[in-house]
Length: 379
Image 1 (tube, rainbow, N blue to C red):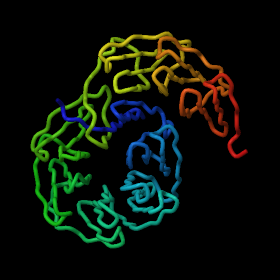
Image 2 (image 1 turned 120 degrees about the vertical axis):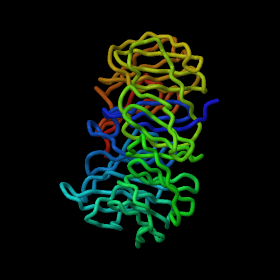
Image 3 (image 1 turned 90 degrees about the vertical axis):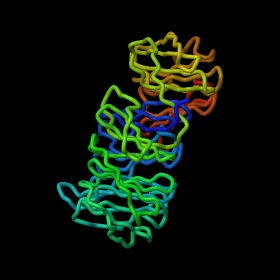
Image 4 (image 1 turned 135 degrees about the vertical axis):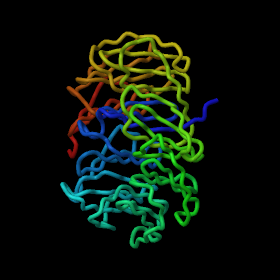
């Protein structure tokens, strides 16, 4: 049996692939429109923070269905880390400058305070707990033991450009250009492992200290602290970032037999898999994705959302306000006449309750889509 992992894989071309409970879902182009998502921090299965190429920070508490934005005047946000629902840091860079800031919140983003300002590039930071944190400034590594108020330079071997620091269990990992350094005593002493075949941009450890890194379209893992690497997965596009949440998912490539690109996939009861994609295509598998069948759709629009609320009832949404429902486990689909011309958010609570919204308009139905009410936000 392959070892299981939970991964969020960020692919070039502004796409986000998300996994929870064995299912993968595309969020495209959420949450950042046409901007590239360059970094994420997941607090749990529902709460996540994301950054892009602007001065905005994005937050979701419902696994990415809805996103709220925070704007900062300090510069471009290029790193965010939350260690729980309340405590988080961001790293910003002033436009056209090497002026960097670390900014901290202790109340879930309601208020923020600057804890460090330097004219040296901050490559990365790591929050270990409420007190201990590390930052990489230039080629130097610093540690704080009081939540970022004071910093001490560590005695660290020259490993070339240091650009990434991560933690797993009781081990801190730092990668240089072709070297992995790790410490099991919060940075007091360090071990160094050379990996000459790689020039790392980032390494990510899982809970068992297996290291993961990406190179072009390849995802690699190492079980000996970076001395040797094994190719685990090849993506159809270049992988720009990876983040590990847990170790409960397996890598299996499934051949559907269809040429359509999937835009959303949903797994129900750990066996049935439902997928929707381009030009109104809907697919169903009842054996973990081994065999698929194409079901009839009443739309030629791209379909981007699929969700089942019970064994029989399912919902699919797409471009230009397309909304469809099944009450016979996907055997047939009915197109619903909802009142919005288009929508960018959908929530299904049960077989009868469904909510749609775009900008300042919310449409909701409590009878499975037979009738609808509209409410203007703020009214």
